[in-house]
Length: 324
Image (tube, rainbow, N blue to C red; front, side, top):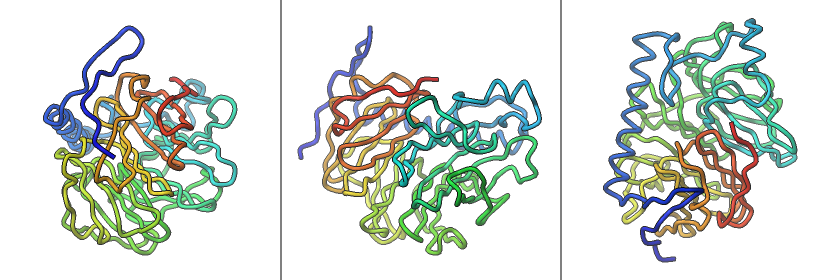
């Protein structure tokens, strides 16, 4: 499939051109530098400061009634990850104020109020996440890898509590990939479900996606474009002529989807060798691209600047199902 040319993206009352790869590079560099800066601010200033998109401030305390009322229900503030409950197809949304479930109505918070960063659904009985506790929780500021076996209601530490802050997570069976913000967006790999980890030589990444057909194949997003490993993250090669991407996901059927730094949606049917901009990119809202989850080649969910959108025609059209 040939790579799509640069094209006009428009929305209600606006028209702008998608930047070329060099412009995307600078946007992505700025975003990645922002991630690193946010981690530095967190360690220097503590938990009380209002930050950028990368959350140097804490969720409200569990015992704060006014905060509880303000942030109960559908308010999520920042969306950090998406997944689908295998038991019934409901959307799970990892956010700054907890894990939410979106079915037919408004999003319903499942978990305690805490900041979910990296998030992935391994199977029907296991969710993995990372992030930061609510102010009233007795837990380290960086939760390491945590897991839930009850649909996201309760969470337990698996490993690296107080050490790692995974801003991106993906898993296939017992193989888990995470991008640790405390280590300069360092890729970490586990072969035993997250109990133990290794840190291979890899470029700094913002996002990561594993091929569910082959856990050794993993795609990472960097300021210089996507990189692909076929040996479990031990080595990476740049994908030539690929667009710059921030958030990526690999559907079970092998389809790749990615959001670029200005919110354009790209699709690849050949493991990242070639990409095309989907028709529905022109209808996505302007703003920060937060997350993408591909159920299969036709069905996907995206989050852009607090809006959650659903497509069942490979990104050709989108329905907005929630807006902050």
